[in-house]
Image (tube, rainbow, N blue to C red; front, side, top):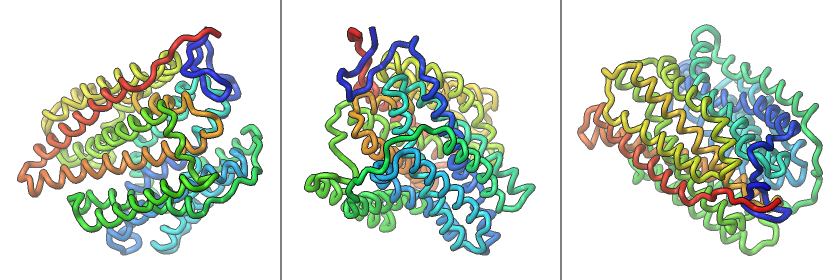
Length: 476
């Protein structure tokens, strides 16, 4: 007896709870986790260091911001290339190349002699980090044989869960006691360890296929995604989605992506196979994931600002204040994965979204005088729910996916998640800006309004969760 969402050799099945992940799959996931720590850490530390870099290079913050913006745009361009590169080089070889690129980019950034060289090396870092982030789920799916997907994904999500909380603390300590160069040197031993482990222990695969290089499709998809993300990212500083610096690149990006969709319908081997949307469970899960990213990333921006703006906390203190949320997520992470593997994603995501919504509501009423103990308890409860949303939804998107379309599914999922994150951050920033300027609100009132919107969006994720599949029993 097994729990399955599909039958057939090319589809994945949901195993019984008693059937745990294979040792080979667990080993692969742990190796990938080590490799992913550095890119996750790098992003959080670099954001903390922007003000320091502005003073070091005697450049305005608007120019130094390109240290982060260039990384984001390069990531968007590289994501669609991953599928072709994996077929051409093989998963293991491509992973090693990606790790080496991130390592080289980190060394170069640490030795940067001016702002422009630093930005250039950040692009190299992004090339490696983007491929790693896109390829990792595909490698896990292949190693797991479609079994225990959510449990393995829960382990794979550890860096994304823990590093954003502790990263600012590490970054603050480095900038306080060492030079800015160490925000990049710290990546080197971690990246080197990941590279060595991957070279020694990742299984060999059948790369070297002569897959056609769809240059036009890759250009349309990569540049289109980058332009769209850039436009969205400008909304916060502009204070409006109608500003020219938002609308012009955003519309250009949408036009290029529309051209990509049209292009894929007229060639045999497109860079990204959009037929993945024909798999109903993938389409629903991807929509839910995009919306969840939109809702949850808005709160990710709001919560640190809540501490810094209303309570006068430093960046380090704001990061420390969010630790209870990370601890809550750690408590339920494993259980959420196991329950998703056994019962499907529908009720796991629904319950997670309801808990997260309930624990977001109190922020609508909290202010500068709210007890730290109450805040910590609420955040811990919110963390309990968060583990039941993103990773179970990502796992659900692969349950019915044919093996030959895993690369394209991962690329599409990654792009949609990035767009959702960008929109979430932009909407939160615009709401705060409007509330404290045109809206005539106090800072507390603006935050309350923004949390109302985030709460409603998170509740909507619970509604979308009801459209996800549940596991159904079939005879073995």
